Amino acid sequence: MSVSVLVVDDSAMARKMLIRALPADWDISITQASNGVEALSRYRQGGVDVIFLDLTMPEMDGYQVLEALRREDLNCLVIVVSADIQEAAQARVRAMGAIAFIKKPVDPVRIQAVLKEYGLLL
Amino acid sequence: MSIDFISDEQREALQEVANIGMGQAGASIAQVLGEFVELSIPQIRAVAAAEIPAALAALAGDGVASAVRQAFIGELRGEAIVIFSEHSAHDLAELLCYGDALDTPASRELLLDIGNVLVGACLGGIAGLLQTEIGFSAPSLLADQVATRQLIQAETIAARCALLVEVRFGLEKRAFRCHLVMLMPDDAVAALQRALDRFIEEL
Image 1 (spheres, rainbow over the protein chains, first blue to last red):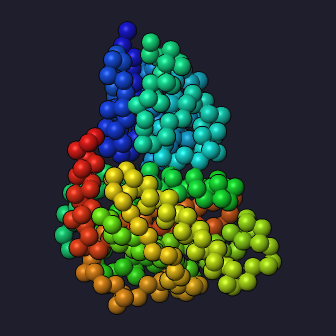
Image 2 (spheres, rainbow over the protein chains, first blue to last red):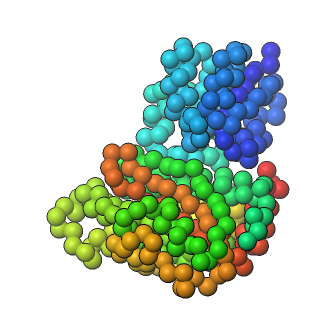
Image 3 (tube, rainbow over the protein chains, first blue to last red):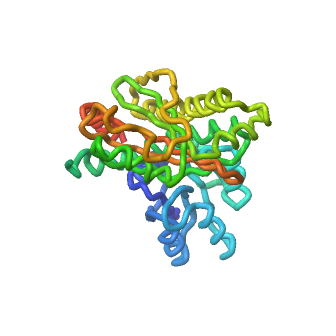
């Protein structure tokens, strides 16, 4: 069954870079959002399995999205994709429920490893 | 000045590479200072030379500030300026345990060192993504606790206009705040555009 993936980043270029780095053989349907508000509204429609979430965004940032998802009883997997590569940022998002942290520029090998670790990719 | 200084696509690519460079710079000073660093969304715009002092003042806000500068050379060419808010040197001294021993020369040295770390990591990151070599001059003090409008003198700017890229770093628990500004003169923008086009093509 196809996995529903939501890619959240204020930069269209960054979303494109991420989507290009996803495994070619991964059976997915992709939707995109350019800030946290759009992301949550898409999430609340239901059916989202995996969110790739940027941290630094206007309107509502990635931390606020994680907070809201937790309040609303998170039932999807969130992978944070960020240029903010401070160790403290990585620890924070994990504490807030993200399953993994992927540094920008994204490395396809690292994405594949994370997806395999969580059984999202065989 | 034309609003089409660079294309929308080039601007977006520059914003993303600046974002990644900023992240690397933020992680570097987070490690040096042992504090959580708050990052901004990079801002990019074209500014006429005469407007540069006012543009820097608008970024730095009211009051006084200090600034260090470093020229960068290579395919990417211009000036990197790091503007430190008034009490930043004091905050840095406390974090790095200089205590009361901090005199004026030592405080200047501190700004030069932190500026150098930020510029090296940020611009080094950008150059790496654009697959181009970059070199830096030694950092020097551009302004020492002056009114933000006087950080730079318009008549010292040789270019007609410049592309201004700004990123901001703050500390969660302290007043410390600084802005890293890249100024690329109009005659260096064509080379930047070529580098950005290569980057876009490879996506």
